Amino acid sequence: MARAKLGLRFINSLGDKSRLKKVLLIVIDALSARHVNAAFDSGQLPNMLRLAERGELHDECISIFPSITPAATASIITGRYPCDHGIAGAFFYNTAEDRVNYFGDDLWAIIRKGFGEFFNDFLVRLNGEVLASETLFQRVERAGRKAASLNYLIMRGEKEHTVDVPWLLRLFPGVPWQEKILGPDLLCLGDFVAGSPRENRHELSAPGGPFGRFGFQDESTGAFLLELAERNAWRDLTVAYFPDNDFDSHDEGPTSALSMLRKVDDHLGELFEVCGGIDALLADTTVLITGDHAQSDLVADKKARAIIVDDLLDEFSVVPAGEKWTSHHELMVCPNMRACQIYLRRGLWPDLPRIVGRALSDPHVDQAIWRTESQDGGHCFHVATRDRGELRFWRARPDAARGRDVFGNSWDWAGSLAPVTGETSSSGQLGFADYPNALERIATSFAKPAGGDLWLTAHVGHEFKLPDTALHNAGSHGSLHKFDSASPMIFAGAPAGISLPADLRTIDTADLCLRIFGITGQQAEVAGAAR
Image (cartoon, rainbow, N blue to C red; front, side):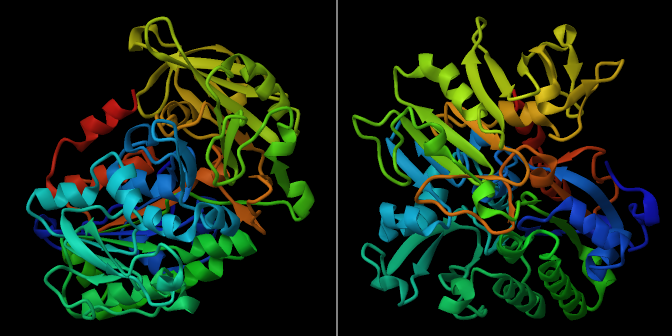
């Protein structure tokens, strides 16, 4: 719900809004609503708060499911759910190609896959082949505008860029010295790409190297952003991605990671100063700040923290992490932190109830989620739990629905809404206590051919694990739970007549940007994708 206190509403005090021409979208990885809103209330993050005071602050912008970075950042920049854009998490299997897609940071999974193949997948295939939807960069530039991507993971555009691989990484077998990728007019990707086709590669520079994640860090993004401001080289759309809060939240916990958010806030303060003040920036630029997902806290006991999936499903032969199917394997398991996809070998579907029963025998497993075909050619979605019963639900015509969610989707169901902590008002309005927008997020998570047959989610405090995958220390995400899924959104300097809706999803971000540019058609496409 949009926040009304502290006067955080749209303020028409910055002059003629009709001349606004630029958009700055800042995505902070793992930006947690419950921690950031508390920080605002205590006067922390002063520069973000200054933006909110000049515009709007929405307490909770709801991510997709799975709430995992590659999928979630794809949804922000395409305005689509995984069922459309095809990126089903950080670790998933393409059944049509018999190929494991791994875009995480787990060392043993990378070693099994081969560093060269992992590198090519992350740098080339993720945007060039796996992504199945147009990006905001493409839509804006096809409309005659210019766009820039500063360290954003999903950066596909229309311009060819040369990737110069740092010399240290060239030592790994299979890693190319140079590569060609498509991006927007200006593409900055750490130490790999730093400029546009018309600019010298070294015109834009930022700290990086092997001890600075090769430029994939907040300091680099902040440096790129400040240099654009100093040169007055803004594109019409600039998307800046700050990843470090996610790393620190994993290592130290979401609350402790607020120190990293304060550094991002300092970058904003420097940006305001370079631009001649916050009001000067907002005079011709709309600023949006949000996260791709949030993070929840993990239990301190490492042994208790882990849900070891192959032990849980020891009646079945499970493919080792990062390897391919062989004739004797029955299940492909792809942990995505606090969510987990399971793929069943053809012919094993009758064993699904036994697999679900085994999964739910672990008290740390929260939900088992799967999809079946309905008689009318649609889909029925199932959510089973250990102690809250089972729900079956499906999309329904408005005149035949038992309930509607706040985004206009009509639903019918059998069983209890308790597995998703749902309830309906007397008018049929659906609400969810712990799993926001649960029905739409579940229904749009099956990204064939890349989505699994079965999703598992973990109770707060726990992560899924295979023998060759690691656990995080203090924080994690991936599930439907609100602690994993809700980020705030700040929206300042918008043209007159454009404001945040009362209820907000990360997939709405692209449409907000397009509306500022006067580019139409995206909202209808988003609505269609959700059906």
